[in-house]
Length: 434
Image (cartoon, rainbow, N blue to C red):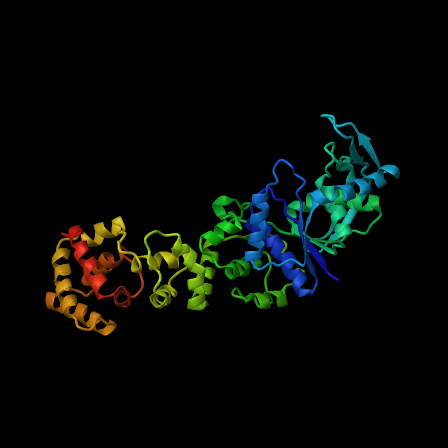
């Protein structure tokens, strides 16, 4: 049976690169009907923190990556590592060395000579000249295992059959192969996936979008859109589709279709894909997802769920993120309009706008039925009477009522704002006009 693992260190938050590694392991396990294991490599006493562990686990759950076993913690397996190291010591394959700062004696593995090879499932055969490798620390003088030793012991004990990880771990492979050889055990199959790059093909950094998964969640990205996008960073389905439900990704995912070169992370492409997912989402579900965003804003009355549903449906075709969708809805549920300064300057402060708004206030006030058709007819009739373009009225109305220059259909927006509040805002905007 296929058994794979994701083994984060709780020394930082879960980022795109690590999330992609976890996802490829998870997809492979689900495709092969195997086991996905979560192992926490927490032996860095200085840098490991509970807050990082909580964020990593919550981010994995948010992305939908459920684990079948674990989490296992390396700090709870210290006796296991000492037993394996002690065995190598007795067999003469390792030796002890006094620690520089006192404490216990470190246990060091004698590295083999010659060449060690492996058949990487992504890159093919790889050979390592072991004369370039120094003897390997197994147990440090503080009693904790070194990474490359604990990793091998864990993978063996947990019966890991495939190690799927980033290219940056290739340099660890000869050290780990030496441990496998010394212990007399068969290593798992290795698949080193190319690193994620920025759009300029340099190694991904914060300027390219290398922030934590929780940051993407807070920015209003949908988990399914993020999973869809990062699954395509280095892997492609047989028909090169971009929008794929998770079930189809699992069905198609194989290591054979993982590329050998680095994939570029493009925040604009991710944002586009997120918008596509928002457009196909059920509006009621979107309300549930964006409610926490709206609830964090002050002085909003969002108790009218029917109106909120209509607002979401109005802006859903345009929104790229949940935050953008929530921001679009704010002015409907607030008593105060927050004006964009540039919109006021370029639209409301134009000569003659005051008289146009006064005429609009009079015409709107006379409407007995404040619905879509009557509002549009009213605006277009007034434009004809004033011998101006309808746009010369539409733009000032939008800024006066919403505070912004762009948005969804103006007439639908005004209907949802309602007659009383629309008139109130048109009157309030007079102070900003000329």
